[in-house]
Image (cartoon, rainbow, N blue to C red; front, side, top):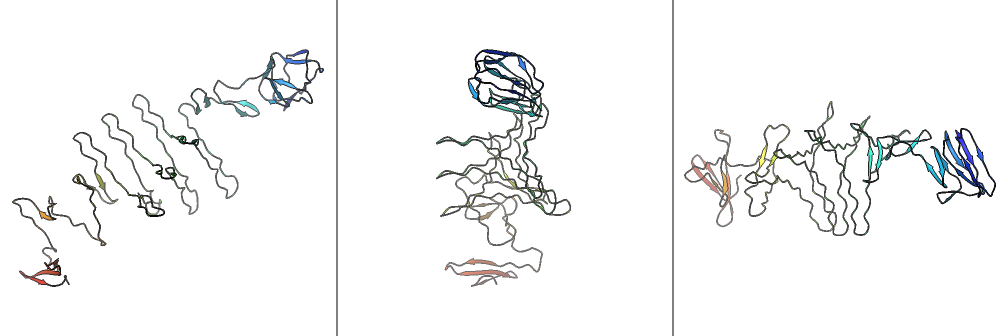
Length: 371
């Protein structure tokens, strides 16, 4: 590497240098001279200014040693350094020289860092581990903290819009790392709202499909557990869970499933359930719940939900009714099966437990529950 060494000593008379230095050089004048440079000079490598006990004035500053790599010039006691590349391109060390890349820019007017060129892929990554059993490097992207009553800075990840003529919008994909060997787990993916202070609420986490275009349907939102292994293994669970109360007396968070609101004479969104082996959905219609919320409590038993005959509804005091001038049919036991029996538990007017059943066509009443 070639070096240019210039020593200056509080010089007053004018001495002008205009040259290209291609080898190590030493320039000195007496203590009453003033040194100035006219024109440009370049050094293949490093240019050093060693002052000793003197002073070299550059842009009204006092520097003991400066090291500069690209072409430079002096004019009117001002040091001028020629940057590499086009305006806005960020400088970096390229084999001991200033280098740039059109794919790496800074827009000072709009505070935009530009990465990549048209139709290219940009990768921002921390380093891979090189030592045995060492983890890969972590990467943190963090916005600024607020001051006093000011909020923290926002953070947006957003894909680009599609072209004006039927181009699809870009996708956003965030994926945890894959395991590469042994019986090791894949990396977890976690998204959290911010913690609150005092009596404030914790930050919400909102995931929302995109708005439909004009007459188009809104975008879908999927929560899906992972697929099982290629040779065996169960599919992963997908869980929705309310938050836990931690201390004192507090209620756990609810899990709320809401269909979308209707517009005009449309129908509000329904809640649909379907297991993996079913073809059809079970639809929950809550449109008749108008006066207040209703609670449906499950008994501590397994079994099938008891439903009414087709087209029957609950009305009045829990009555089974098919409507005026119609026959209401209620089935107890299994018709046609001689091994099937039916017994009814109820209460008498004294509040005691009684039961009744039929022997042939004769009803038998007992002062106990069914045996």
